[in-house]
View 1: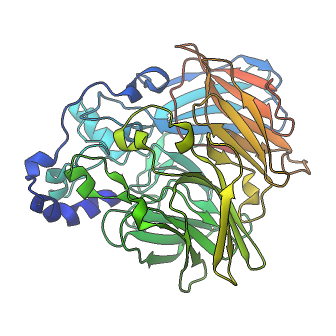
View 2: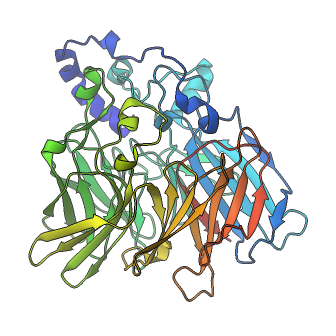
View 3: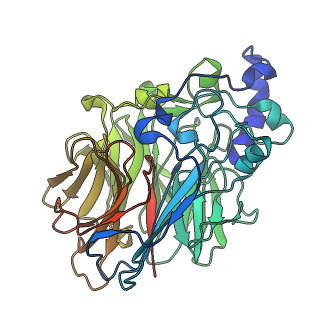
Length: 484
């Protein structure tokens, strides 16, 4: 049973007490979701392609695989479908600049979760989505009320590739074939949700991660050593369940944003989504000592944060850079596929915490309209100069210089859409931005997608190389680069 499903079992009586019978707690049929159309429209199945056409010249150090995860429902969804609900599908572009016959190959495969296997046996969708009440009749029989769709992100650690979804455990994948190798790579050592955004300390090799849910303990933190063994696990006391999609680490701390973006089954019982927005509760940042010890909490302005960039320590100052919105996006609450109003769009934001005075200074680093921040990952826990973000309308990218406080923009042609840009450093590079950005790009309509290779230093609008994929690729979430 997935992490959130176990929590749901503990809350079943509370929901019934609100006047809902078990039969009323299942999903309902709904209309066509905007997340099933246009740029979001799913692919009908798995494919692969050899000897892809490469326009331009692949840099010699790009020998490896670009991988990206994202939602792609296998069957017509049951009830109100949200983008967060679809089955995980991983798209892989394998690159070898020295192979003249086939410098680029492509494959996409579903993550074979238990829920997907069950639906394939039934020949239809069986699970409600996050905009629906959970199927607690299933939960009461020890089955999943929500599906662990493994659709959000990917991480490489201790020579293993994991597909992640924060409501349940990771799934292990073969990095070449993308075959699903197992549904619990932690072998029972961890129970409950597992974040889609674990952080790997480049010095120690530790993976720091967390899980949150709708029942106590609302937040748990864990650490895997470089060999994949669980070396620490602890519960963090929170007054309520909140949606915590991401966090950050420094050398000494794990940083958590306790913002008023609530995560509650009671919202569902009132006909709302599972997420809520209660700014009157305020906001705070928690510093959890990685080596053990009491958390310290610091008040900040209430805001909504989905993704962080990085955090670091400098004397008594801890700095966190994240993408912040002034409120939880109504588009997510309502399950819409619209861009937020300019005043509500996320923007790169800096928090500076003075440990000596317990004061926090905070403020924006750029105009609104930036999300999915990426950087050179070996800078994790260290001061970061450059950040790369995706425009919230998918229309291009921004490069942020956090030292000079400048932003460069790279816009796609009208009607084109891009995805998160993954930074790959040059092996012999000396500057922090000495490397390339890899991103999937979708031309208008059903035209085949590209993988663009951009020079991260010059941030030129003309890609170094374009890999032409066999077909269109729907909008997705997060990717990674596996060298070698």
